[in-house]
Length: 129
Image (cartoon, rainbow, N blue to C red):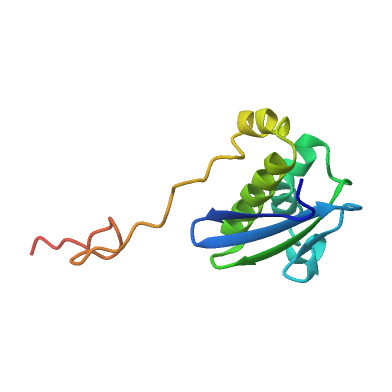
């Protein structure tokens, strides 16, 4: 077993790299505690959900580097990376995480804007006369 497990998680345009090692339950995201980085309680819980489900909140020290996208994308990226790290550490956690769909990379991306249109699908206002 490796001392430090490193995994990658992606969501939209966000990329999170997680370095997980046995410890006391400290979570550092971009050199800030998780409470400071994800100030919104819901986003923080969403990001740390894999730890809560596997009841390993106090067993690991986690260091996360996340960049790109916004808060929602970064939350999903961190969650996926932590879930992957947990399965790499303990294969029995895989069943719990898979059931909650935390090991699946969300494929949804922003659709590109097309020419002749205002946005990806929205058309310019039509004027009959």
